[in-house]
Length: 551
Image (cartoon, rainbow, N blue to C red; front, side, top):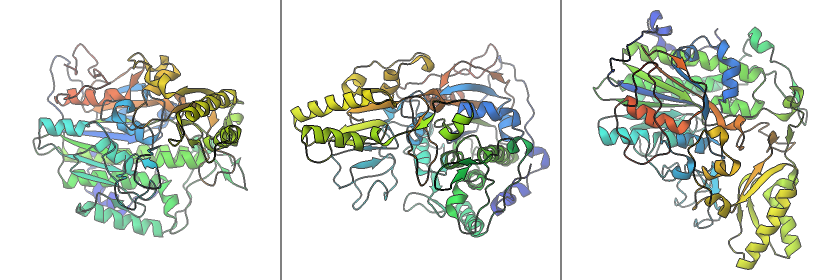
C-alpha cells in the first residue's frame, strides 16, 4: 500500500536495498540450548501514544514492519505503571528500568518555586538556569533526568559502544538517550536539531533539506483503504470544527500539519536509518544502540482522536515506514535486535466515545481546574492572590508564601472541594503518597495511591495529586488545538504493547502484564551488559524454550 511518495532521502536509502531484503526476515529456529552471541546493534523504538488498545485494533492489518515484530516476543499488555501517563515520564522509564519516582521525571513539566526566574514551571528536558529561559523558550538539557540509561550502562561496560537517538520530540530523545549520546537529534520546528555546538552529520543536512522542500509543497489527500473507510466519519465539535474523516491533505508551507502526519514519522525513521548506515552502527565489533522516537501518532491522537480515518492512515503508514527502516538495517548484514513500545496510551475524544457505547465519557468542566478552585478558597479564607497552582489533574501546589496555618486551611478546603466534584475520583496529599510503599506486584492490581507513588518525587511533586474519574477528558469545550489526550491513572493510558524481535528467535506471546521498566534490564541481559545500579524493572526471558536470556 503506497500512501505517499517517499522523501528523497528515503528513496536514496532504499534504492540500493535488494528487494529480498525489504521483505520480513524469515523465521529461523535456534535451539534454546545453544546460547547466542550478543547482537551487534540494539534498536529501541517508541511510538508516542500507541496504546495497547490501538495495537489490538490494528494488529491484524499490519503487513510490513509491525508484522515482522509480531513474529518475535509479543507482550500485548505492557504497562507504564505510574499515574502520570505523559510523554516525558513514559520515555524516562523505557531505557532506565526505573519508574518516575526514581527518574525524577514526574510529568512533562512541574512547578519549582525555587528557580530564579518569574516562570516557575520547569519543562522536563530543559536547563532552567540558562539566563532568559522559560518553560516555553528553553535550552534542551538532560540535567532533569536523575538516573543513567541503558546507553550509559553500555558505555560503562564498553566505552566504544555508540548511542544514537533520533526523535520527533526533544524530551523523547533526551529521556531515552540519557547523558552520554554520540548523536542526538530531534525536530526543532523547521528541521532536526541537537545540542548547541554539535556538528550536523551529512544525513541530517540532507534530510533537513528534503523536509524543507516537502513542507513547501502541498500534499494531496491520502487514499483510504476499505478498513480506514469504515472508520471515516465526521465528528462535529465546536466553532464549526470536525474531526474523524481527514486524509492528511496539507497546504503548501503548513509545518504543523506536516508534524501531525505520517510524513513526519517517515522523516524521523529515515534520519535514524541514514545515521545507522553512515556511522556503520553494529559493524565495529562493539554493540551499538539506535533509539528512535516516532512522534506523529501522538500529534494525530491529540488533534484528531484515536478512532477516525486519521489514526487509521497514520498507523498503516507507520507500519510501512517501519518496514523501510528494517530493510535498510537488513542491507547492512548486522545482527540486530529490536524492541518497540510506547510512552503511554491514549483516550479518544468523548464525542465519539459516546457514539461508541461509552455514555459516561465527557469533557472536564472549568470548576475542577486548580485556578477555579484556588479562587473559591481564596475568597472564602480572605487570602489575596492565588493559593493553588496547577492544572485540572495531577500535581497541584500550594503557594509557598502561605503561613503554616494558611497552608493547613487551604489544603483542607481544597480536599473538600475536590472530593465533592463529580468529575474527581480521588485527591491525595503528598504525605499520603509518600507514606505509600512502592510495590512490585502485577501493575493492573495497583491501587490509585500505588500508581501515584510510582510517579512521586519529593523534590518535584505537588502538595496534592488529583485523579479524575475514568473517561473524563481534561480538555474543555472550545480548545483551539487538542481534542483528545492522555495522562490519567487509568489503564487506557497505562497499557502499551512491548514487542521484541531478533532474526532467528522463536516467537511467542505472553498476555500477562509486564512493565516498560522491564525493557532496559531485558536488553542489558541480551547484550551481556551488567546493570550497574538498583532499578525497578526485571529481566524478561525472551527464549521460548528451556533456555533463559536473562542468565
